[in-house]
Structure formats: structure tokens, C-alpha cells
Image (cartoon, rainbow, N blue to C red; front, side, top):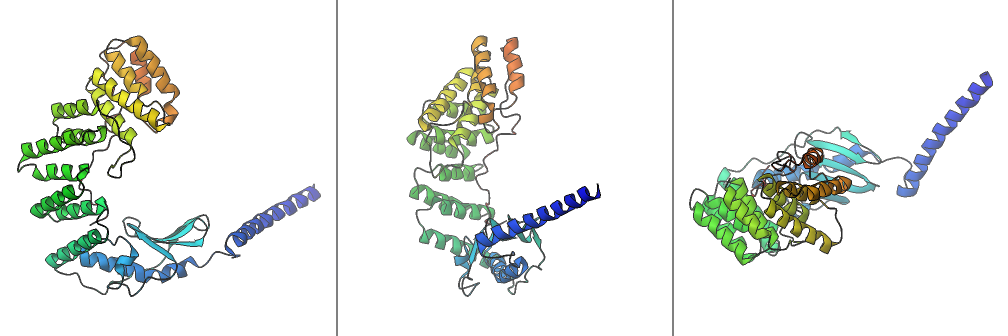
Length: 384
């Protein structure tokens, strides 16, 4: 018995040593190192970058869009190595495979850490202390606008930079300047929905009817499913229910456009939220027309499940076509795994179809757990 225990102990020791050896060997083959580098030392080398980023934010009210923007006013030169900044994280990559040294600027996780296959956890270092004092508010605002306008000059074809400028002005409560900037964006990007919705939002309470009509006129001049969806979303958020349904009626006769740089959402999200809204309001004919556009887009794209089946089932049920409703809900349940979390509550829908509840109200969004209202003036790290 003792011999058996000794053999078992030797085997465990061999396994442990072998496991450590394999890990060290793999590390050497992948990196040329037997042991991980000193992550705290690497983070210490990045402290001047953290200080420069904080001082840029203090001076302009903005986060830099890259480390290049810090040179030369806040940093004499870029440091060696694969340092990158993308709000809210400064990252050093390339030291170890699938492992980064990170500094996060966003609470509650402000500070250094390592994250990846060869190290994961906090790195204890004090936050660098800035040597600059905050400028007066007006000077800080002018500094921020100068940065945003410089970014536009350097890349005049990038629509997101114009959005950043408008959003910054809105957050600074500069209404007239925000309107002027949105008009400029609309002129530069006449096919972009964002400046049109921004102008409509900025005009609420000033010339509300005229602004909503201008947004609708623009959509009529640039007709496709996506643009009418944005008009629908604008009206939905402002509780203009009849007008929102009118926008969906227009969307239902136009095709869904894929792979647009301007769009904030996926084509499936456009189709699902549109059809789910019509379905919840028990507009079965409109629901089916919207589902047809979704199905057509999926077939042209060549992939995707049948996310429209549940909504078709609810529409057929409301129309009293129970056998078609039952067939559609069966297919929806079979393909539920493909639908990325939508639609919801298929069990209740199936029971209603089996019972022939033609007045059943199907809320595929489950009270908003799938749908998220579009916040057009979200800061996206501009002034967090």
C-alpha cells in the first residue's frame, strides 16, 4: 500500500513539473522568454502617457483620438512599443501573446491592470499627478472646438467627426452653434440620416412641426427602409404614434440597405424593431409587410435565420389564420438558437396560437429588453 502511495506521489510530482515545464516551454517558443516580463515596470513606463492624456482632457474637455494628438503639446514624442489609446483605455500590446497592459480612465475601474493569457489582474501604481491647472471654461471650450475642427480638416470625409462636433456643442449648451454645425454636416453628407435627426431634435420647442416635416421630406427624397426607420425612431421616442406608424408604412415598401457606414445598427435590428412595434400595436398587415422586407434582405445577404417567423405567427393569429400562425411559431421555436436573443416569449406565443387567441398582443421586445432607444447626442467619450 505504501508503495502504491509513493508511486502516486511521484506521478503527481511529475505531472506538476511536466505541466509547469510545458507552460514554460510554450512561453519560450512563443515569446523567447522563460518567464513573463515585469508588468509593473512596463506600466510605470506608461505613466507619462496617462499624465499626458489626463492633461489633454483637462485642457480641452475632450479625450485624444490617438496618442499622436498629444505630440508635441502634451508629450514630446511617442514612446517606443505598441502603445495605443482608444477611449477609455490606454493599452500596451505585443509584449506577450494575447496579453495587454491596460490603463482604464473610466470609473469604477480607473487604474492599471494586465489582461490576457499570460497575466490578469490589477497592477498597483499611484495615479500620475497633473502639472497643469484647468483653464477658464471659455478657454477650455475654445480649445475643444479647435481640436474638433482640426480633426475635420485632417479627415474631411469622416462623418463621425462632424457628429462629434455637434454633440460637443450640444453638451456645452451652445444651441445656435450646434444647429449651424449640424447644417454643415447635412451639406457635406446629404445622404446621412444623423444630421437630419440632429436638426429635428435641436428644433424641438423652437419650430417643432417644421423640423419634423423637414426630416420626413428628407426621408422621402432619400427613400429606403433604413432612413424611414430613423424617422420612425424619432417619432416613436417623442410619442408621435400615428406618425411613427406612417413612417413604418413607408419603410415597408422599400428595401433594406446593408453595409452603410452611416448606420448605427444592423439591418436585422432595423427589421426586428420595426416589425415588433407594429405587431405590439396589432397592425398585422403592416407587420407582415415589414417581415417580407426582412426576409428579402436575409435571402439577398445569403445568411441569417428566420427571425421574422414569430412576428408572422402573431400577425396571422391576429388575422384569425390560426393554422398559419401555428406553423410559423413552430418554425420560430426550431430556429430560436439562430436569432441572437430575439424575438422573446415564444412559449406564450405558442400557447396563444394553439388556443386560437386572435386578440393576443405579442410583445416580442419583452417590454424593451431587446430595444434600446437611440440617443443621438450620446457623448461617446467626448466629455465623460
